[in-house]
Figure 1 (tube, rainbow over the protein chains, first blue to last red):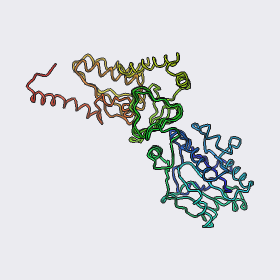
Figure 2 (cartoon, one colour; figure 1 turned 60 degrees about the horizontal axis):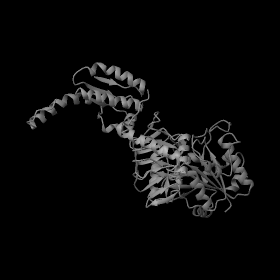
Figure 3 (cartoon, rainbow over the protein chains, first blue to last red; figure 1 turned 135 degrees about the horizontal axis):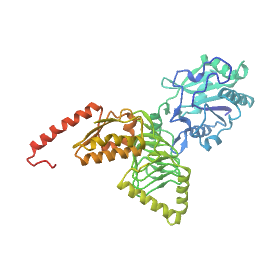
Figure 4 (tube, chains in turn purple, yellow; figure 1 turned 135 degrees about the vertical axis):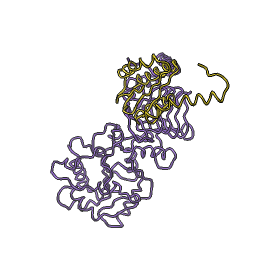
Length: 368
Length: 119
């Protein structure tokens, strides 16, 4: 399959003039005039983990599985939550090229020089379980230079374009691409699609994945029907985990806590003693303090998005919610290595017992 | 007495709140409405202060009610399970009027039961 793929991680919408050449230009991604930012709690939605793997990594793996060999990833903005695996999966880095469009043009140029015949442009955004083979067959049969994928009546940021008109035209590749838009054909995709336009959409994606309604599978082992643990996840024996649920790699679920309502607690999180998590996505590296009641929410570090109230709250008190500090993660890792019989492990168990005892007597400490 | 909490409530604001509350605490059956309509962020020290306030007022047979709770404050109260501890009202006026309704309820219960109310 001689196809070059460019996956754009949507974030802060890059400036229309970020190539420094003046007036804004029409962009194919704006075809249906949708929202101009794809940030979820400060991070591009494509970099968010879903059941142990980021959306971008899942999309790239799916494309590779469909036979695509040339895959480049370009980000519209900084990737604060980008994992090392995301970076390593890209064949092309944009670090040396300032601005989005110069980077994009550079990748297209590289593909054309390598003799690529067809380009697939994907912007995340939406999560689409695309049948790439069927899309390419449709594209060839319609003989259109450009095919855009639609889900129901919504145009997705997913386009197949012939390399030939890009190779032959004049001006920047972006200009040549824009010139093809009037000739585009619509490919209606009936399969699983999640626009990931709202925080609630991410929550729905996790629920769909846990209930087997989409192709996403949790990264980890299924310890009981509907309950998955990532590598190194540690769940106290007094904690309650109700299926379906996902506990990410190196995540700690402490004593007397509970996870329910199709919740996912992603990697390197800590749910402290006595806290209940219901109908939630807890994103990587999040600490949930003792005795809390976290429900109908997405939590990432100190930010909590309440799905029912449709509001994002930043909580400054790290005793409630916050990030798992590197020292805390180190302690947890040491504990898992040494085990409860080790000296270090024993002292931590004692500390845990003290915390649990504290919880029953008084929930909150003083900060004077 | 109605006390309006500021946008950000931490230990410092909690101490100010407790100072403002002192006169009310000297009265018999103090009635306090905490207006939380402006609150955007509230930390554990402030929540602890609310619990302490409730405890002191309860000892004098009074009550603390929360009113006009902003979505941000409601989220933190739910998160910390404090929503199960306090009586909450949509507005300050509803919280205030609930105090005047309370004696009627007591009277009704007195009528229903021949036993004298415990002081």
